[in-house]
Length: 362
Image (cartoon, rainbow, N blue to C red; front, side, top):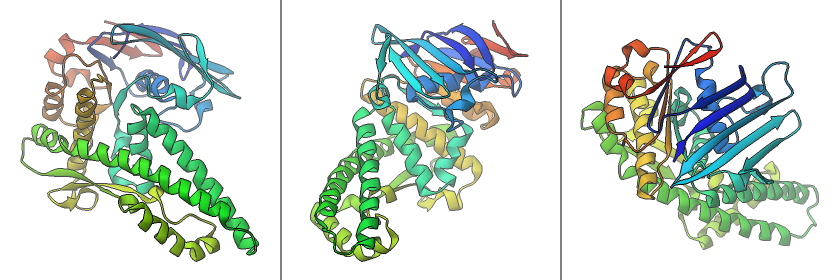
């Protein structure tokens, strides 16, 4: 899978930009604040229909403009498809080959991107909720069924919480509808649990190998997946019914896969609590490489974006990482420090310089 080109209209600081890309290595460089990350953000937007930097689509629209458009041609298994996203202050529309997809969930998962960005440390440092959100994005990027199951599950949670509130206010109401929602919650949750479990198991097959190759040591890195849904449906139903009195008071579903967690362990210890920031960064990039390995085993060649990696990792580790990436992958690297980049990398890359709001291709 490869981006052949990109067209931006009123996106961030680009009023009108057209770029062609190299099939393998694209090096985007310039000073901070010039718009390097805006380019890879646009690529990510085309894949996931949202930014990795803001939750508000309006922030993507150029100042004093009312709308934006992002377009690109993507080559996948000899088929060239044209993708487009338009956003104005009222709505967002997505298109493939000029066909408007009414539901974003039908569009997502068509473009497979693996992103490394400094915010990815949140996967280790932040709360379980942030970890679940990140894992959901990673799996949804290639598994559309999972994305739809998550969407269904979230709707069930909202419906069930609302009905718990009604039951609390009116104790004479029938609990039959609650039982229906609980059954749906468990069935959908089990589907999500099984996909997550398989994903983490597959990631754990290679993540430690990548950590060792990047760091040149023999530490042991694994991800531990914990879930209340690791039990049978019968036991799940019993435990949920046992928590009903507390749920009624809180108007909240207390049992489900929305409590799952994914924790990185280095040499048997939680890396959040006992690992250095350097070890945490190495763990995250190892995780990203393990995702690529997982996708390639599924005959998917993802696009790899390394946003500002050269400020996050030292040159030795960067060279180790790039050696581990197959030549058949398309890679985008953004950096301010082009002088520190290995000459072999620079010589084999398409160099795109961002300077004073203009784009120059070397």
